[in-house]
Image (cartoon, rainbow, N blue to C red):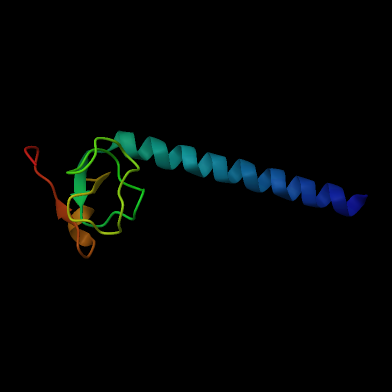
Length: 89
């Protein structure tokens, strides 16, 4: 019985820590300026519209040059294959 309580407590602690980390990462995204970065997105992980669809999560292949994701400003050009999209693209 003592072992079960230990593992339950460990699991709850891990879940709490992961939730707290995710919340702070999400907040950081909105506290900083962002840019649209194309050419680095994994299939199904894009933020919004592209050439063949109008919704996030619809990218069909990895690293499609038209699919993009929002990143903190200055990050995109540090990633191999990343290209910052201008407002008119």
